[in-house]
Length: 211
Image (cartoon, rainbow, N blue to C red; front, side, top):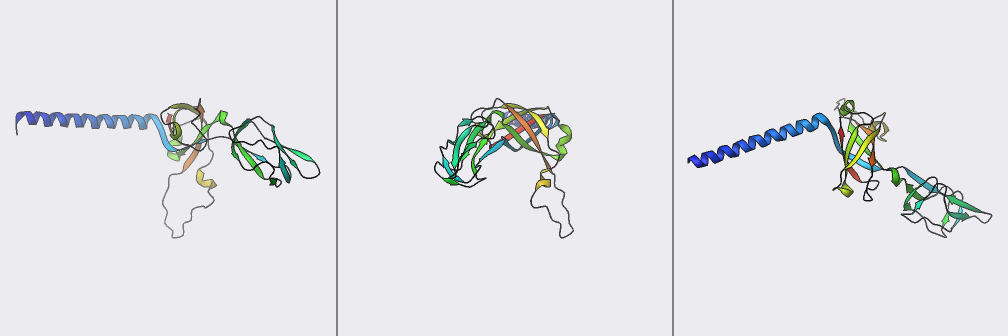
């Protein structure tokens, strides 16, 4: 083997070793200083607009995208005896319209759904083993699939008081006597500061919590 080729191989080997050491140092630093998960979703407080009585829906203004105020009248229902107003419960944006004008509706029927788009947050499912490393008020870096080119800032607002499995409709069964320990996840609510218009409820997100 020529001397030049040997030098080249040694240089390549050194570069590979340095790269591996740098990657190891990076992953050690990240794991030491951050709790990360991509098991997260953008959320918002959702309210429903419901029919106060059965009858004919008149003057309906439930267009998706409309921003409405608290207790705003969106229409009224005529049941042959009187006209009852259909009011919103709270301020929000209509994200789902379920009916149309001059439709017969039933008492308690959901006519529309609204979301508080001014106070979006992320619900992140954090491994139970990582809870000891985080607390309310910790800073969070957030990326959202719908606006992946933007890094959003946030803070932990609250940490759940039970794991997600507690609320599962199908509890785990152990019929054969064997047991496999599974790491449980706890929901953590994280505020989003200044989300863009591209960030919508239900979008997937990734979070990196500073410890």
